[in-house]
Length: 448
Image (cartoon, rainbow, N blue to C red; front, side, top):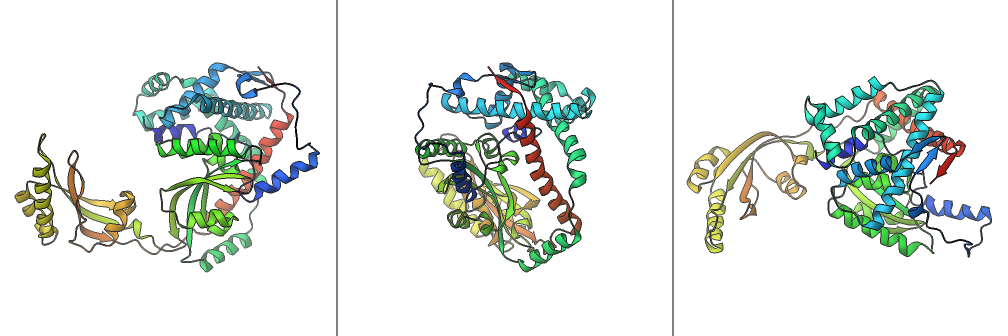
């Protein structure tokens, strides 16, 4: 099972427990509001305390969250990232997992209190579907995998129970009272038309709040997170566990926005220079630090060239083990000259045979599915032209020849019903955050 698959499993219980902290420019306002409490600026603690190391488990309205519960959920998260973590980072991970388990417990308890019980059959059916998607028709293989990484089927089923319970609560208590008027939808359609052709960005964010006193420590923590992400850590998983923005619950995904919506000139300038797939940060802003990840970029209501469907021929040469560097370079030079001599795609097989190269044809490749470095090159090619050679002596050297291209049609944009659904979902999410905050405020929680 890949990290992507495990991240999908984790999303079943979407870490709703992360606090809805203000984003970017709003963070300083939230910090300033702390003055209303009348707290002294110079605190003298009467007792030394390190709650991160002391608190291991909790009792939530009488329900015990055990250390085993935490260990198994942490194991699932670590399997998603597939990267070792430091002892210091492990402390933060365990504390966040405990917070998530507390929120999950509150959600399940609220559903039970309103007689919205989630049956074992429902949970088992959902679990079986997830197993079938990733392990075929043998759910037992997922059981084995979860145990092998230190988690368990019951830990994942508990997540599934929490998600089902929360969705059922929202459908009963919130969704029926969310209204979006036709006028609002039509106004959004008009705005989209007015913005046609302008660029919009799909950004991921991790926001860490800081005060002047904690600035150095928070920046160091942000740098450690960036380092883990650059080594292949899951941005979604890290955003859920560490971000203090309201987008933490959805893995830091801001959705499609125009940069002025960031309401921060510094972040806007940084994002404008980013390329899809690029990670930048930490960027210091008012109230803390932001880590940005550009998921994608497009023009409003315009066809995206990267959606073009390509017909490609991949022509590749390999090198015999032990071949000298000089001989390999000569082979690459002959290969390059041979490719340049090709008279279109119809000549590829003949030239490849003379060069001792392999040819693989694929007629269903979208530009955006190619590596970023190749996308811009491919988009500049005419039919019958090829990319420069790329690769290595170990894995082979190859070129891609463009044999056909079906450009995408002009994007029509979302329709009335799609926009209506989007606005409803946004309002349900905001009310859901307030609902969960109320459950926390009313809870009796004891820490061990």
